Length: 384
Image (spheres, rainbow, N blue to C red):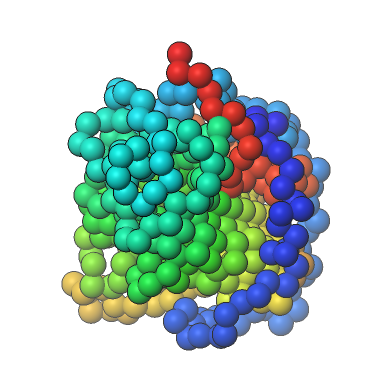
């Protein structure tokens, strides 16, 4: 299964009823009631072998071939971050120290200006005392080891062509501390096969004119405000933001899967279950295309939320738009979609990138996303 392995035993304490923080009003419930007599959601279909854009059999994952050689990963992202090449044209940098800084450390490699393909020679935890800033043309490749970042997170600031693969992020503490913070004006970023949980702010935040980003095959758990895209209604430059999120597993996280302002987000083949407020939120001018995702409700049933705001250069108060195609809603999950002016103007992914790997929402997809997202116990490929 393309390097997948079963980690259900490590995840059982995040399934079922999640341990959410106290209720807050930071992402309030919108005033769009559920239909009083909504029909029950359809069961998950078994799933045919192919869909509109699928080019693979069931129970495999996209781009599994990239694990055959070290640098084959470069340029293999799907969606908006498809051009990210990381440090493919640089030398290999070996992390030999799990210290926060100093010779052989991850921080030392990330601050270097030249392109680098960064690999790890040992497993363990790197405790970051401050944000670890990543410079352009870097690949941080955790394949072959189990490396966890804690304390603070990665900061992708005014950089381009960065790939982050197969790392764990847990226990980030402090004001405005995110697992991966992408701002401002960063582009061509790919976050792949990372496990993220328990940070004081977001797990992945993408704001302030950062764009052309893909988040794929990641595992999110034990968290409140999971993924914010678009800073606030005053940052009108965030209209440029474009993000693809696919084949991710949001496991009991409370809200923001994602919450979007201004930009464009393409969601496909993700599994979101047991959220605490809502699954996906469209705020000011957001354009969200949700295709062939699985939304499985816990206590809270509303999948899509609309949160009206007023852009700094506009007079009207408005939310954004969401288009749902082929999504499956389980355990009483209610889409609560709203039609209206602007809904027909949502972007069409096929007019931006020609192909992507997608299959119908099915039992096999749900199973593989539970097994094959987040950090994977796979060997580091040879550099050949």
